[in-house]
Length: 447
Image 1 (cartoon, rainbow, N blue to C red):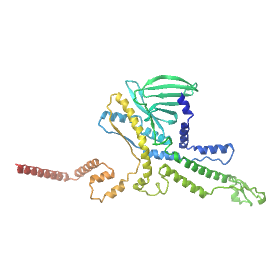
Image 2: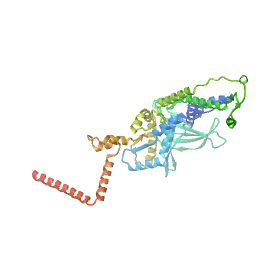
Image 3: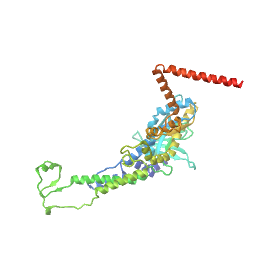
Image 4: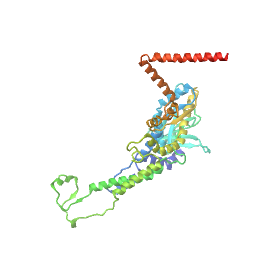
């Protein structure tokens, strides 16, 4: 209960909620400004967040987690088949993206490996969760280990505030909370893991901040500029047009769209002097901030005329433009993959209990990249100093597969042209006879 009360009031959960707000396009600083102006009844009072944090996270998540491969290195067929069935049944492609996206948002994503069913027939499951609802408790060792995890969520019973699940390596405990009172909700469940089955995914090697925490001040500034532009438009729409002459009949037809004081003399006008930023400066500042956001987040700006998809761009040029983003993603992958291997290890522990002999698994995070095969093939077409097999490897295709397909194509050609098959067979027979004659001659010479 002590851990729960401390966490609810901690800075950690406030930071997680702040990241959630930015991902949900609710700029926290802009919300404060909007509420303050609403309290003071200041108009216009627009709220125009850019949603840039959401864009950065989704772009990197799509680049990194769209195509994960789990490759079993050994030849244990039963393990390979059952692992693939477990991953497919759990919709691992969707959960890989969910967990990866949350890890980028918060620098903290949570998964739980568990089983459903009874001792005779149990099914291995894993699920991705919002990290705001989890408290992780580690051992005090230098090489700290996860001792247990606490999940809290809203109670289904009106008499209680929260439900708590406390999960250890060997036991799952259930509680319910009302203010500071805690009571047992159900009997504890026995678990059979060698470590706590809760997995924490990280994307930063140092610190607890999100991978994109650095660019949040730039996003704040950009949102203020966008909101300022919207307020300026509202000021123009709501402005009183002071006219010193009678309007034309054609102008009067649209009079209901204007707020006008007609035939007002110069001395009767009450004019106000306002100081506004020029549109040119706002545009300059917006472009500068967008450039800084992409530079410090290491995420490519696909809509920029210099680095994006404007005009015809070759695959080679796109890969070059993705260099910085790719380097940053590999840095994230170093720590993220540790948790992916932990997931496989926890699944394998249950499979071992079921009598399945496990094997080594290699996890590959394939990047979403243009293939550029057209450019490679054009460059290799006139190259004569390397073999066809090497050309296939450079182009990124399987030599053995392509060789087999070429042979199948030639067989099909022989069948379609009358007489060609017989001639080919005769030629093969002649070559075979010559080989046999050479062997006989060599044998006579030895004798």
